[in-house]
Amino acid sequence: MLRGIHFLLTYACNFECDHCFLYCGPDSEGTFTLNQVREVLDEALKIGTIESVYFEGGEPFLFYPLMVEGIRIARHMGYQTGIVTNSYWATSEEDAGLWLKPLAELELADLSVSDDAFHHGEEQDNPAKRAMAAAKRLGMPVDSICIEEPTVELGIDKEQDKGAPVIGGGAMFRGRAVEKLVDGLPTRPWEELTKCPYEDLRDPGRVHLDPYGHVHLCQGLSMGNMWESPLSTLVKNYDANSHPICGPLLGGGPALLAKEYAVGHEDEYVDECHFCYTLRLALLDRFPQFLAPRQVYGL
Ligand code: SF4
Ligand code: SF4
Image 1 (cartoon, helix red, strand yellow):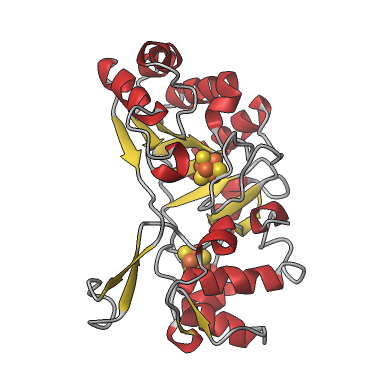
Image 2 (cartoon, helix red, strand yellow; image 1 turned 90 degrees about the horizontal axis):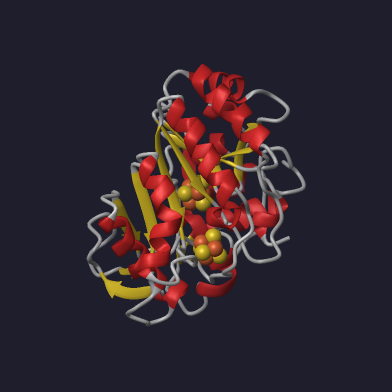
């Protein structure tokens, strides 16, 4: 049951992280207008099961007034709200408090701060630590997200064969992470990649919405376009089995997706997402409505 909607408020970001699965950066375009935010929240109400509304990006604080107003409207409608940020704005703890106070007054339920070397190098006194300290001082619920460079360990994942290499670090091999991070990592035969391990494509609990109208089930994998068909209608009519990409993924993971559309591929991939993303890239022109926008594929 769909319980959460996550606005990708903008694709623009002041960072350009190697692990970014949306290929965001300073040149990325696409930002919601306030009217579009309102329209989406009205549609969310019609769905009837939405409990929480998140504002993410890109970097949502780059459009601070829009983000605050979106949260104000969402709170007025009774939703729990959250933000995911790289916290570039936390120049000092005191100044971070200036940015956070209006959000504390709106009773923001979750502030998620990226605190890792991809975002802030190895500095100990970094913007994420300052943002977290300021949030705690204001009594706000805050947590950190930490993604590290991929590491290779042996057989600690019960899902995999004992002794098989397991990739740690938390990066998802989609988007820019595929371009920047997969070299040198251990791989598995494509025939073994027979499921989608991370997303509930049949009955998604949350979707990400972008300014072009795409309703993402996974980054760059769209349910449909909410500017062409209202969000509540898209959600009501969504049938994973008849979706041209989700259907095969549910039936047999990326391996079946490759077979279904006879996509040429390598013999081995780092994991399911690496294979899935590579196949989707090859299928972009065939399914432009469902594999979009092109910019999250680095194009
Ligand atoms: S991972 Fe986050 S901070 Fe890094 S480029 Fe992507 S949106 Fe920006
Ligand atoms: S297998 Fe594909 S759809 Fe599933 S989480 Fe990975 S990239 Fe997303």
